[in-house]
Every structure is written in structure tokens, then in C-alpha cells.
Image (cartoon, rainbow, N blue to C red; front, side, top):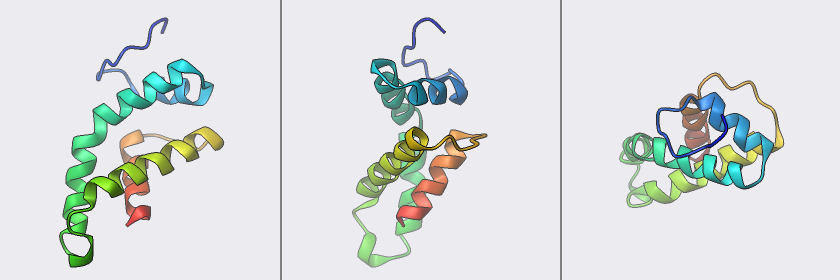
Length: 96
């Protein structure tokens, strides 16, 4: 993979490899992942918080927090990740 562009059809492993390598390509990979999963993650979080009045109106903030937590874990650890979408969903649940 010589050039990493925001191709939403790249595999999660490609993004993960770039994030763990660090540098400017990691920043691009992070942006691409956010674009790839933000709508699904937001919908998921909105369903979770809709059951709790105290969290209404904050699902977007929680999605951002979950994304930051996920990235921090991906950068500091080398977790066995089979699906970034599933890994991200776990981060969302931990924020909630």
C-alpha cells in the first residue's frame, strides 16, 4: 500500500497497520476510519442512549469519546482486532 487515501473500501487491517505505525499516514488512516464508521456508530449510540433521558442529545459526544478511547488503545496496545467495527462498538459500550 504505497498511498493511503480515504478509500472507504480498504480493509480495516490496512488502517490498523497505518495507525500503529504512527506518523502522518496514521493521521490519514484515523480520519478515514472515522468517516467510514461514524454514521453506523452514531446510530448505534443513539439507540443506546434513547433509553436513558439523562443522555439524550449527547450521542455525538459519546461517539467522539469512544473513537478517542479506541484510538488510544490501538496506539498503545497491540490488541488482537478481528473487526474494527466490533472493536469500536465495544469502545462505544464502555463510554456508556
